[in-house]
Image (cartoon, each protein chain N blue to C red):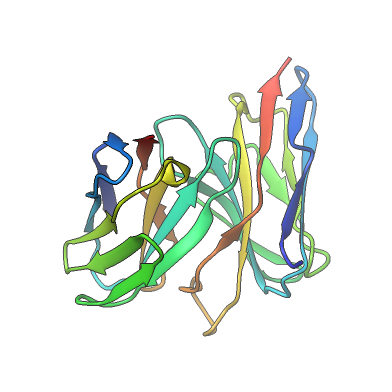
Length: 109
Length: 118
């Protein structure tokens, strides 16, 4: 059975304190791994797609990386506006997305 | 601006009542999806559609129904058979790069409808 596990469940950082969020998956034949940001009461906002191990993508203070077992979302020098829940989802060939439960990030000023 | 519009933002259902959630997109996407989000759980797929007049059940379709009469619209009906309807419902859409199976292109989401029981 496909599984996606995100850790930690919650993370509290001080402004400027860099850290990483983890998304571990057990999927054979990965077709894509997706990162989303979700603010309270809103729909998820697409951030990145990673398709193969070794791939990296960056956007402002965020950088996503992918290995054969996990993906990391690195946050460099975060600001309070980066506070949100970050969702990871994986897709294998011919199948639907499987979402993790998310990591709730809080960045204090 | 292109996007996905869900309405209403909040909805209340009475016992034995069917309610319909609206989802409209102007992104010209072929595929559309409905998810349910509960606290402490990942998003779960209810239904999806890749083309007008065709749709498939997801993981938790029981108690729900959909229609796809237009490319832009994919309404979800929560029927009285759904005994635990209280949740946050999300609609999404995506392009399709290849035929068959699920698209591996990113899905773009609306801002959801929160459904509660009266």
